[in-house]
Image 1 (cartoon, rainbow over the protein chains, first blue to last red):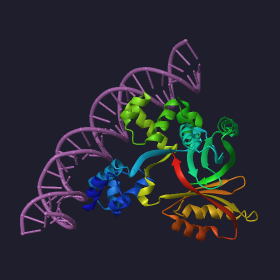
Image 2 (cartoon, rainbow over the protein chains, first blue to last red; image 1 turned 120 degrees about the vertical axis):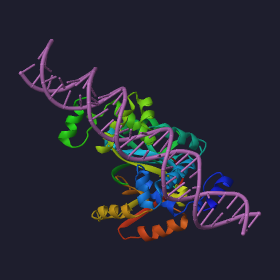
Image 3 (cartoon, rainbow over the protein chains, first blue to last red; image 1 turned 135 degrees about the vertical axis):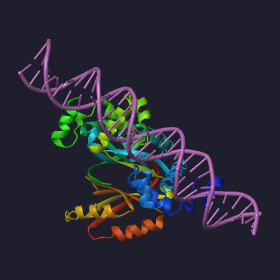
Image 4 (tube, rainbow over the protein chains, first blue to last red; image 1 turned 90 degrees about the horizontal axis):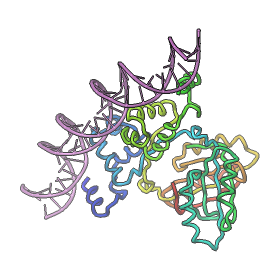
Length: 160
Length: 160
DNA sequence: AGATTCTTTGCGAAAATCTCGCACGGATTT
DNA sequence: AAATCCGTGCGAGATTTTCGCAAAGAATCT
């Protein structure tokens, strides 16, 4: 177990080798439910409560656990409609890519944004309340000269 | 505020009308960081710590907050590669849709699965460690008679 | 309007949970 | 073999959450 600290100190961040089976088990559990208490973790992992919490604490500090979030039922925000958009940009404006990403990051409708290879450039996941809102969004965002084409896929149902 | 409990009792679950601005603010905050303490929430929301926690407790009980999860850096699990797949199925096998969804649900590589309208039928988000693993996944899953076409978009970078 | 009922709030005590120092034991280095 | 470096469990102390209670606000009823 000596490796842990050593590598952490030298590299300043974690690499795979430093996590043992306990860490993986903890991550697995917390990924499913981050509100498990020290005692609950202890029972499932086989370490004392304190040991579990210390490990979790370090996983957080070192960025292995990036953050903890509450998953809110989408219905609540009335954003019942989800759309996946395949976006193709004009090839002559590569400088636009970074700007686009930043802009997408600030738009509340954009739940996810992936920059991809292949026939398209971006895959966006959009969450809106209805078609009207989506339509407005499209007009506002996608009718730009450097956007060549966009394809909207309305989501009928999702898993995970 | 009387509406809250009333509807809750009658319907057994929450509807939009029952959430006030405080609830929305709390949800907004917890969606970003679910580890905020009562005092921190109190300061940002303008209610007492106890009131905040009581509300959050209820949001959880009633399913408005579905669950809390830790977000683990994908690098940690060695799943460094993300691929988005646009899947088109043969039109004559609508019965396959449900089965597919269930199967995707059980595959650990499939992080997300959306059933969509339009030119494609499914949009999958796949997380694997390398091209080799992805290749194996494709061979195993996509080479089925009822799958007409699939398009893989490798993710270069993501937001959110 | 006024009385009644139901709900939420803030406060503060009690319970639960987390953090931290400490001594011990196993592993690695010298 | 001695010294050093973790990680562990234990337990005290700190922090956080839960809960009961009285008071205040709304909604409902007369």
